[in-house]
Image 1: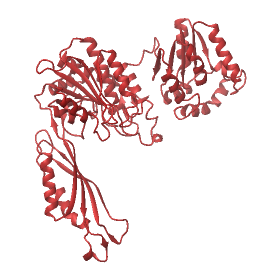
Image 2: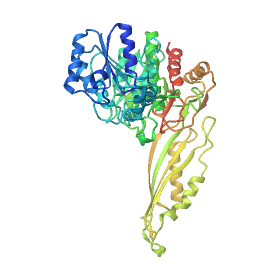
Image 3: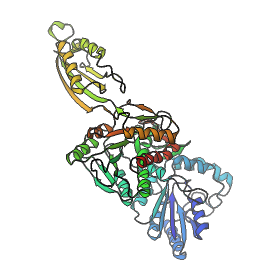
Length: 546
């Protein structure tokens, strides 16, 4: 047994290495003891002597554990280890560990000297994810990813007898957050998930459209009407940009545990739910290898962007080959204050318009020689925003129109503009149809005598899973029994990829974590909720296909 442990200062390397040495009878080498000159502060030994000491230790000991932050020495020893362990618990944990670290006499002449140098050490530790030297996260990540042998990465305290291993769902969530999958870049999330599900017996289909990666992983019989229903869990691996990383308390793509929450871009929307779905499916097929029907996981890297080559294209492909999905659970963050307090049983449709109103440019002193499109559009705008489009129905609020952008003018205060552009959006219910809304809006524009052009984009039709639907009843029962709460059954909010799957005649329900921090700086998810999610998704699988 030859274990090589590395990571940032304060990540727990020495504690873990000592535990391994005690448990397995290994000889322990702290690389600090061969890097620094004895009795001298922050003075390194010559590089050739450091290398010679490391090689001599490895040659003299058939069973060992070596630990340190020195990337160049890790690279030197990695070819001779039997296991590589990367401790990556995040900056906050490392800083806290260093602050309470006892005196290290092999490094410092006295506790006072150690305390004096703590501030410098902490600044260096805090820069771990930004530095580009041999002792940085970037070099450590390269070493770990390139190693083909047995290896493990721990994003919290590593497992010992007194500190068990991180749960599957937390570990996978952290691994996904670490991948900078800003839409439409998947950044390796889908291959990671595909490999896991393939080992669990799933059939893997990679469906690439344009620049977008999509994954369809299935287990069980293909659908046959009435006999082999298909349940799909639906999610996305892409995330929105982080915004200014300096505004985050911890790096957005470095998962960090703090105050019972896991922080990182995508923690809530929706890498946590994706990880929970993967774990739930692994457990379900292990318990029910011969389950009824077919269960699948559909993932895309194009939900947060234009959503053209993601689930929209996959559904077109499914329709073309006659592939049916009976039920679909979407892992979008649906909850308001606690897990299970709200589920989405439908969504409004979204219809956007880009309107151009043409006038005649001229001098403001000669309005009779120009046509001001702002003045011409104003009465039509008032009528559009005052129009009562419908009354909604029992499941949806009335249709609304909102103007999001108005632009006209040259920037000069003495020029009547020749053109105006307006962007507006309908959020509409099943009480209206997109074609009718378009026709009514254009009729208002014509009634006001405007010279206009309008380009329409239908992002999705409204959909509703009816109260008597088996999936809706099942999800409500699961929330009631496992979360101890009667969920609100809502059709509010924006849009999700469920709108595309619903076109197959599929019952669609959205169930996921609390959405309070999605798309924000310091996005996070409660660890307790994340740990509970696999049981919720698993219970739905059990009741429909078990």
